[in-house]
Length: 272
Image (cartoon, rainbow, N blue to C red; front, side):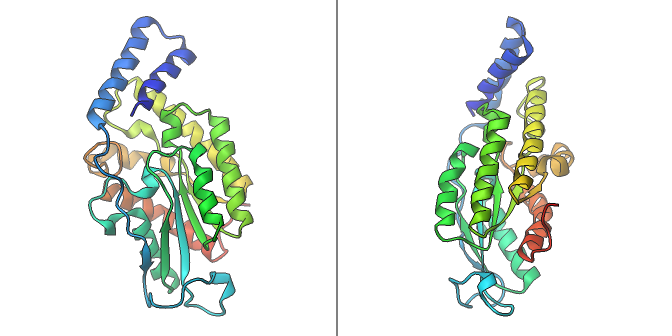
């Protein structure tokens, strides 16, 4: 959570804060770090095949197989939110929930492959994409951006890096859905006015991400716009650290990601 101190620094630089105001930002970032702490374990992993008739052959792309029933490969890339940090049961991981939902919707088994790494920024995404394009899946979900905010990565740079990686995935024939940066203004341990700085930065980043993702041929889902009100109102949407989502919070996110993932897989949902 050292990034909250960097947010305080950038807020001071951009806003011309007085020493007293800068001290307030610094104290708020310190308190947030104390409350949130450091994760005591990495995210759970539960890669494997989900859904009906999971014994059907793997190793073939959906587009290479005649008829329904081919095993679909689904990759998840990004940061701790993509990886599912905060849940206590592997069945609650967002990748597992989405793989199961995809299998139910399309009537085929889905193999979940998780590449997301907790703490990743968009600068780290290239290494994950390297692994994915070496053996491309049918579909990929990317959730990234929160750590770009907390580590003060420039919004234009962050968005451009994301667009470049989406292009690489699309060039490899992978359908891509991106969950844009969540609204960090909903994180309760961050006090005002630092919370407003985090909210503004994350929303601007999400808008820039959407532009670059759609230019690159992916589908962007505005997680912050769609979920901020619920996360603001529901303390139970956060896990014990009060920063990462709980199982209920991830369920809310997956409920809005499933439809575009299905649409991309069926070649029905693409940016215009």
